[in-house]
Length: 349
Image 1 (cartoon, rainbow, N blue to C red):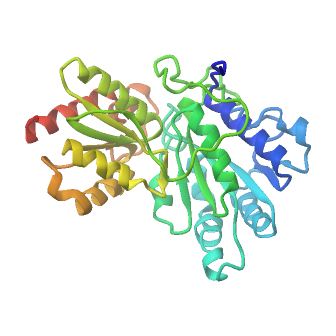
Image 2 (image 1 turned 60 degrees about the vertical axis):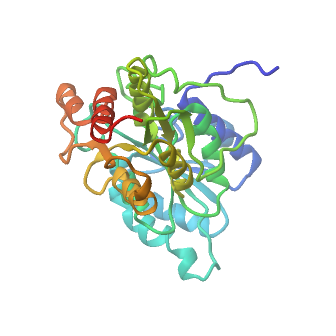
Image 3 (image 1 turned 90 degrees about the vertical axis):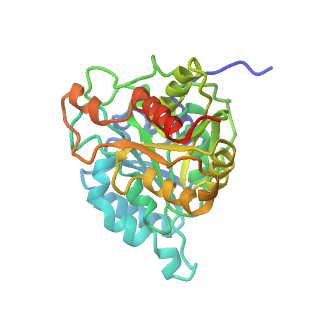
């Protein structure tokens, strides 16, 4: 019988990196502070000592430079894992990501592949407008990129291992409030683990993979389907648990991977419930929720008993003040309110 072994997401990611670097000498780490300081959120702590500076490469503060270098390294046979500390800084290196990494395989007729992973911390964390954006939808829009967003430590390890072994470029988004680790220079961990027990779960020791493109049904229900990912998947679970006391049965789907999107699991659930709420932390306009809503409207309009509802962040830069920020980011209460509203509009079964 396997002993339960619970890891934080930061620990699970570190274990995935260590295992893949031991398994395949082509795997290298590159980015700001990944070596000496162990990464902005301590995910790569200790890996420099184990694998040395040829495979754990600290870089200057030049996202375009080190992401571009990783593209070249991938084209010539390595499998780089790039650390872009905050997803906001991905805006500094869109050219090597969206113009080069995403398109080289296509433009070369398959003569080149770009097997690289770009890890980045996403989501609001009381650091203001330039360190808390959720930009996942930007990369869903770029053909040639895969987009991954885990919400539990089990998924974080298994998905990262799958991403590293994939022969295409993968954007790997980690919500900074789910790491469970102290950021470099931070006085306190920006963590929600005490209130979200579903984040730190059993992580098997050793080899396992979670396939890209397969969502997880976190809770089964009959009245409404709620689809989300990362932190908002846990907020959806909180809403579902509170609504159960009111006799409302909510099915919660955690996407885990945004590209490829597991639309089949979503449609199967919507066919059962007839109602859909999609939750994403990013701004409403052009959001992840908007894309999923459009897909379901096109493919399952005839089974819907009520309009699809999106619960997203407001179309505004993130404020620094925690109280103000809390008013524009979805939470369990706004998700629950949307579900009640949907049931009132469409009638309960």
